[in-house]
Image (cartoon, rainbow, N blue to C red; front, top):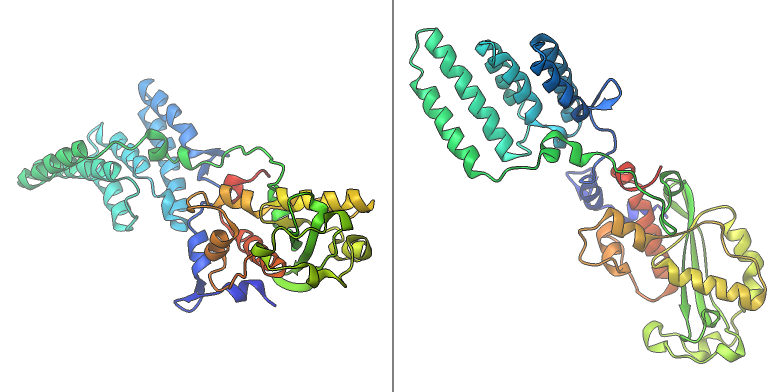
Length: 366
């Protein structure tokens, strides 16, 4: 069963709802010059200008602007007016008003969205000022341009000031992200094959009271194998306290295998694949408790949590419970919550969709 197709809800024939949602997450590589992000060169532009080297300052400022424009063609979020304004200012200073106006007109004609209203007002103010100078030089009436300039000055003052880190793009830079116990590195998340697991337990006495386990193996975006079975808990843990949650009662597990009975099959099923669960602290504790009780060595080498990962990649969600995250990541999937097979499949859907996130380099350790 193809996981991606199962969640696809087409928009305009080729884009799913979840793909549209995840596309809002930022990709990693910022625009750069000489191997460094463009904002790191801004102090050098200012230093060259102060040192009386306007041509060198302009040359570097143009490099930064061109790098920004190249990035903005791929991702409009990198359309940062401040780099155009800087080039225009370096032209305008020595009286090159035609060049200043030309730079701004060309940028605005390309139709970039205004990421920061105050920066766009500043840019349009500079354009009006340059055009007023040109009109005066050419013997035309500068009054309309002066009026436009005054209007933009007033507009810029009214608008809230955007923090400089946002104006320059620095705020969007990939952060150095520390590894976390339940959150994988990028390479681990992007592994083609993985297993999702879910346990249901009979009571709160011990994780060894597990009464159902389900595992879903995914490879190449498709479910390639499933294992779901009731489990008979040890006699001392067979009290059913949570039947009202999962609907499993003692009669359901009378003929079920024990954890020991399926241990070899579990090891073979998981193999070397990373294992995922939603709220993995619970499922991992159950798995370890079963291994301790039965003296089996089935616990996987790599165990990750879609709940923890969704908190990092999807912080805007109201909560990060399995129903909420599954609805967001897999809107076409019907969850039967607290059925181990359904919960494990929902977890697999979440992993498959978060693998497609464009923000991994910004939010996960390499």
